[in-house]
Structure formats: C-alpha cells, structure tokens
Amino acid sequence: MRIVIADDAVLLREGAARLLEDVGHEIVAQSGDAEDLLRRVRAHKPDVAIIDVRMPPDNADDGLRAALTIRDELPDVGILLLSQYVEERYLGELLGGSAEGVGYLLKDRLADVGRLTEAVERVAAGGSVLDPEVVAQMLGRARGEGPLETLTEREREVLARMAEGRTNRAIAEELFVSERAVERHVTGIFQKLDLPTGEQDHRRVLAVLAYLRED
Image (cartoon, rainbow, N blue to C red; front, side, top):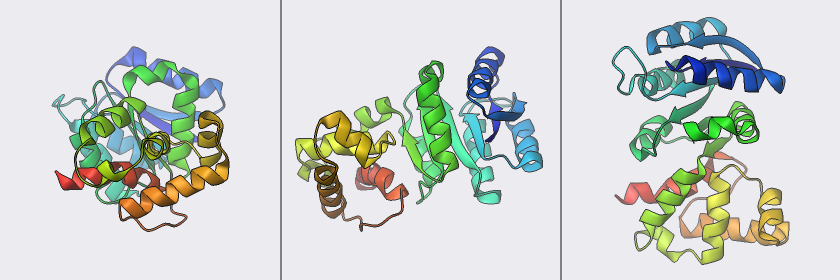
C-alpha cells in the first residue's frame, strides 16, 4: 500500500513511517506542511494520506482543509485524520455526507501498530474508522438526546465497536455472542436511526454520527 504522511512533528512522522514500513507498506512521501502535502498527494496519488489536523503554515486547521481538497480532487485517496484531541466538528466537515474512506484517530494511537495498520488498511479499502475515545465521547453526550436514546445497551455496545471499524465477526467474538445476533443488532440500529440497510460500509459509521444532525 502506498502512503503519504503529513505532520510537522518530525519524530512522530518518522515513527509512524517506520511502523508502517515494518509491516510492508510503502511510504511514498512525507510532508511537514499542508501546501507541500497537496503537492505530494497530487504527484503520487497514494492509497492513503495520513494527515495531522493542525499544520503549518497557519498551525490552525490547515491539515483538515488540505484533506477536504484531497477528498474533492482525488476521492479515491483514503484519508486518515490525526488529532491531539477529540474535535467532533472536524468529523462533520470531513465526512460531508459520506464516510467512505475516512478515518479519525487520536495521535496517542500511533504507538499501537496494530490499530494504526488496521485503520490505514480499512480507509484504503473504502471503509471508515473512528477512534474509540471519539466514539465513547459521542455516545456519552448522546444519552438522552435524539434517536440514540432508543437503542438498547447491547445495541450501544455493538454500535461503538462498529464505529471503531470492527466487522460483525469481530464484534461477535468480543461480546461472546453469535454473528447472527450481531447482524440482528446492526439491523435494529439501522432501523432505529432511520438508516437503510445495505452493503455500503460507510453506513456503519454514519449510524454513530447520526445524532450529530440532531444538534
């Protein structure tokens, strides 16, 4: 898999690159600012761009704005956004109605090569990944609000793992239930959140983001 990494913190960038190279991925370019990131992504057309939200030149949301440009110009490039903190507004801006090929991880996860690799591979395949801390905060704030209030405790457990990128089989193994039981919970979640069932993976993350539309 071909990857571009963009972060102005050289040690973090180099560390992530080394971890990904060690498991067989190719780092085709690294960038320290948003403008250089756009040039390199346009030149290399990678499978995935790993992008820090806050980058030079303005050290604000330059990385996010670059990611939005990439989504517009090169929609086949998967985007894995990195942030120091949980900032839900960035999710809404990046998703823009579609969660296909989008991930959002806290920088603390970069030391976990398994989670980082899984996230990269998932967004490259058109799937979606949300950091567990993002999911926990969103579901916690959603209690007592909107359609998520109608979910059972088990459905919430399934939904949280869906948003983390887990497959039905993985969820079943983690919760010690059958895969068919998980499928029933997923169908129930889609129905309660008024999301049609289907094969498209992005609906799994749109389910956990659905309550944001209620705000």
